[in-house]
Image 1 (cartoon, one colour):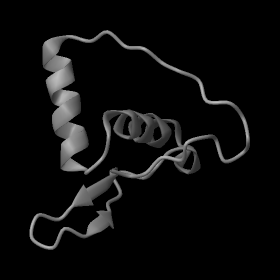
Image 2: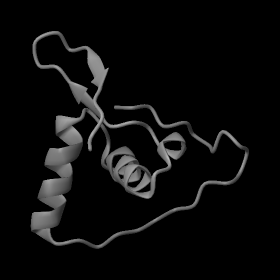
Image 3: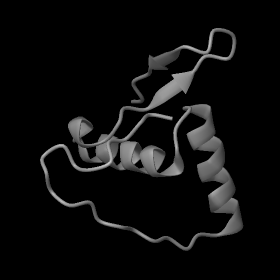
Length: 77
């Protein structure tokens, strides 16, 4: 997993978000996060940050290479 810090680097408190999603959406979230070697929280945060043009506020999307296990950053456009 991307290793999101336990608190905001700026010192601001973290905010909890609760979601209720369909089974199909949850499966898609699990699959997408797994493909990038990320938790669902990091995956959603990365997608929102990318869509909003704020790459520094969330971990970058990452992909786990199946043979080497190395994490490589991949830019999604």
